[in-house]
Length: 117
Image 1 (cartoon, rainbow, N blue to C red):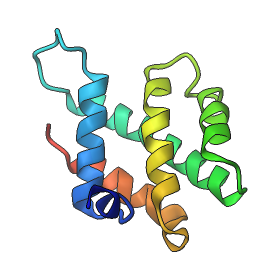
Image 2 (image 1 turned 135 degrees about the horizontal axis):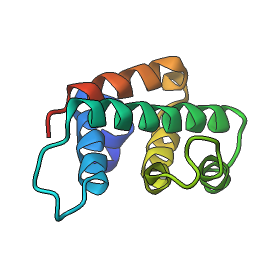
Image 3 (image 1 turned 60 degrees about the horizontal axis):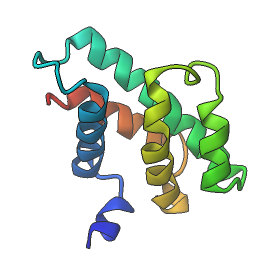
């Protein structure tokens, strides 16, 4: 059942993905909520990963190779976003082919921006 949910980028699934990444991003010792500026920065960085993952999948790269290449990408390497690559690449690679394209990134950005975890 969970596998079926992860293949459709519904707002609910995207919000769950954004929520998971938010909890990974925020340090456990930090009890304060994410600021609007932090959320915007996080959503932009994660959306960049989604865009790169869509491109790698369209280039017929394996998910494993996509993860390696995206982790080394400018804006990702040596940042907190390196830790988000696996989850987001796996999500993109679970999408049906007809859902690949700019709309995947747009849908992710919208869900990420709306999440108020």
